[in-house]
Image 1 (cartoon, rainbow, N blue to C red):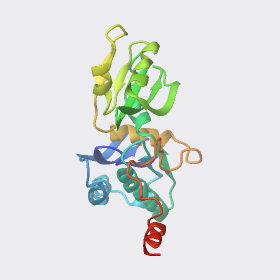
Image 2: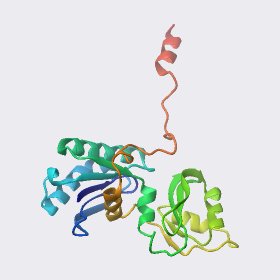
Image 3: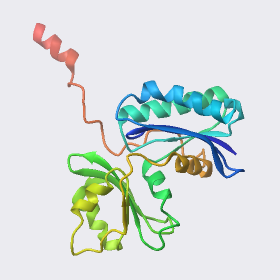
Image 4: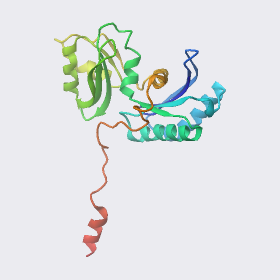
Length: 231
């Protein structure tokens, strides 16, 4: 199976082509960035596909991170995945950045739980917790940092994600201490690809996975307010 993986959810723009039969990435590229995903993504995809020496119609599916993360970044990646999938007549699948973070550790961590955490700002994090075997302990949610830290009840964890260091710095001294702290700014694109290969297109659509509303909200009823002012 040939998978094109795309990630623009957080502070990176990344693309890769995975050949599952060969068990390797044919090409990959990642640029760390907080802004500019829209300008960087399509040229990056073109370079990755050229490096892999593949036409888009040779792909079996396209995988993309669907959140949680930057609203602007998510729209860029998901729109690109959907557009390419439509043009190539291939399925697009979505997976969360939290699961991509955890995938690199699950299976290698023994029984220790894995807490994936993404900075949601305002003293909150997006997080999920899985057991060492990958089974879900706490489903993806947004919560105050102190609530996420209450996960110490599951034992000494692996902390991963762009908020891993934030949790580690607030971790209670009397609780089981983290086994490791991996503060990656974005998930490893190779794991986005592997999860995309395993995902069911029917149950994992390339659709935004939001856990909170946008911070910026439009003014309420601007047109009606203007009409009232002139009447």
